[in-house]
Image 1: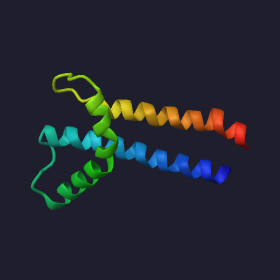
Image 2: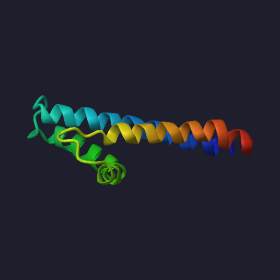
Image 3: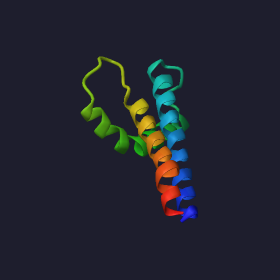
Image 4: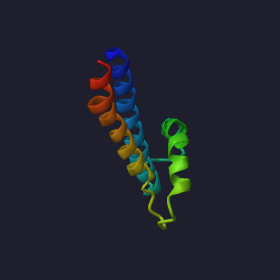
Length: 96
């Protein structure tokens, strides 16, 4: 059971970094720091978008319009943090 918790925790940790990477990439793209015509840059952006958008879209639909500010990655990171803490402080001690 501990191996399952550690695997889920690792997957959530990796996804955490994907969300941060997607947020940073979107800022770099918006401020024209990276070249959007570069094929490698486009592949990275497309990968990060495809990995994070399924989790961010429902959050964006739920949040009110805040103008040009997108706080959905912050909300998703808080949700991931909550799930990890719940798993280690509540579920793991009860099941192990």
